Length: 331
Image (tube, rainbow, N blue to C red; front, side, top):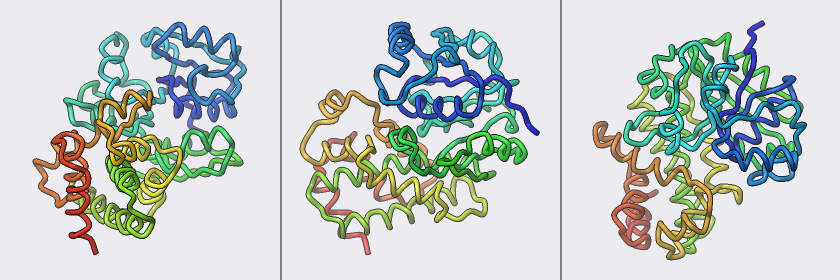
């Protein structure tokens, strides 16, 4: 049986907190890297994350907290990365220990800005982590529902299927069902795109488009995602699996989706900056939209929904104008 040794959670947000909850149900203790010492002190005092999923209580005696990324990595064998993608590089600038010998699982649903790489590519190219030590954790899984113990389906992707299966078994519980895949790159790009499409869904909601159009929008998002994945990583896959289409649907429709909320505010007339300030949370799709637009400039995939979201967010084109153009092109 594959052993993952000491496991570390790298990040302090809502999804990191939900994953920590799952890990502590299956392991004796974990390391937990957080950026802010005051947040750690409040967590230890309150026995819950003071900023996210405050209803989830932890036995803090089983958690080794630290703001020192090198200390956490040095004492851990497996690292679950859950930092927002725009902040990954700044965290890693402090790195002094090697990542390549650790099992790195990315649960980050974003692209590393400037590099325009999904996280597994980033760890592989910049930190020389071999493919067999890289995995992705994804699927329709809002942290809020995981915290409530609601039934959730997760996919573990890894080139080493023995590790993928073993980690999937580690994640599984009475409310978490797991499966495996070799499609690490495809899953990561799908995770980025579904955030972009959730912004589009939110914009349409803010503009008062109804459920009929939202269904047509989601159908076209599935087709657009499939075109891109077939170009960027042409392997045999079914876009209808939960890790692709399921994650897209839940992010596009759920009340917990921060990308949908962000898009709704844009559709209602908020500026990008004012929406970001009011949300007080990271909408990964905002950064993902720009990165995907730049990546697709080299691939030339037909992606009108991505283009529309980019034009609204970065070119300041009227949401009414852009979405009207989409409605004329859909069937």
